[in-house]
Each structure stands twice: as C-alpha cells, then as structure tokens.
Length: 298
Ligand SMILES: [Zn+2]
Ligand SMILES: [Zn+2]
Image (cartoon, rainbow, N blue to C red):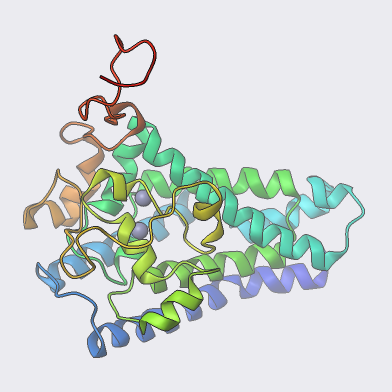
C-alpha cells in the first residue's frame, strides 16, 4: 500500500462525515426557505426515525465489516486484482470509468430490489416514508445496507477500482441522495438543465409516488442517463408534485413511521403489488389474455 492510499484511508471518515453534515445542513435549510410540498405528518417523528436508522446502520456496518470500501479498493490494488489493476489504462480513464460504472451498478441494483419480491420487502422501507425530504435519502433497512455493501465490494473487486475514485463516488452518492430527496423547489429552468445529466429532486420524487407505474421508474441516484437509456424515465408525476401521494399502499399510519416498526417492516404484512411478478401486464385493461393467441387483443 502506498502513502497516498494510507492517507486516503485515514481521511475517509472525516471527509465523508464533513460532506454528510455540510450537505445535510444546506438541504435542510433550503427545505425551510423554499419547500416543494407541505409535509403531511410530524417532522419530529420522521426525523427521529429516519436519522435513528442512519445511526443504527452506521454502527452496524462498522461492527460487521472488516473494512470500508476505500480500504478494500486499496487492498485489491495491492494484490493486483480486478480489471483496472491488470490492463494498461490511464489513471484518469480508470477514475472516470469507476465513478460512471459504479453508478450504473447502483442503478441496476435498484431495479433488482424493485423486481424481486423478497428484496422489495427490504427496499420498501425507503418508499414507505409518507413524506419526502432530505432524511428520506438515508432511510434504508439495515439488511439492505449490508446487501448494497456486499454488491459494492464485488463491483470494486471486479473493476479493480482505484481507491480515490471509490471515495469520490461514495461522497457524490451520499451528497446526491440528500440533494435529490430534498423537499425544496429548484427553479424549473434549472431543473430542466440539470436533469439532462443528473437526477434532480423533481425527477426522483416521481419514484416515490404511490402509483406502481411511477414507483417503478426513475431508478437513478446520480446520473439520469440510465433511466433514459433503459426506458424507465418518467418526466413528471401524473398528479403533479404538490398533488401526488408519496409512499406505498401498505404502511400508511404514523405508527408505521416509528423506528421499531421500521426495523421489523420487511417481515410485516404481504409483499404488496409493486414487484415484477405482481404487475398487471395489461390483462385487466383487456389488452391481452392467454386465450388471445394472436396478441391483437379482443
Ligand atoms: Zn426504489
Ligand atoms: Zn428514493
């Protein structure tokens, strides 16, 4: 391990914490000054629960994992494992490719947790928030956090991702998650320009709509290109940003927003109607039925 890598590992926690508190404060203030929607339930209850789960997840990840992603990337470089540690590639290209490809991996993982019923049970906690603000961006079930870290480690090992690129990606992902969940109104012109490349709060809010078709859209956290490329992009919610209902059809009471209820939520109730095997596929609309052999509809 070289000096630069050991310095990075030492600085990882202060850098990540610094960006977390900095961006969080800016977004929380922006929400007060220029809110996009009225909150529907007690902010105190939601913030206690959503931030409580962040603390829980941070302590759990540190206790369980032997190392952080940046240290893991440095270890892979030491061993000479992973594509970028084997092929002859310029450091700049490896850096940019890592940030972009890790974003694609996170997008793909997000689609997967919406498609597979047992994984949706974990991920739906993120969607069961009845309001949408900066704290929603950090509200994930601890088991989903561990699953994401496992996938992230696999991607780092496969790519041979440079440690500095992993740190930059982690900081960007964290900052963007707080930015695009924030309940503040960007000027519409700025939103339109930004979302040609990046995910904006208005774009990701569609993903938190209670309507399954909208929930299963706009999976990106950083780059907006993946949803456009793979046909999962929806520009605006049907009900408008102020009129739309946030959340999922299960878990709609203040009781469900208590921290203890959030932790056991994956094991409560039915899986619901949001996953790939529960989609309507148009049958109910009479567009196709198994008897309809030619597929042209009735
Ligand atoms: Zn989601
Ligand atoms: Zn979200």
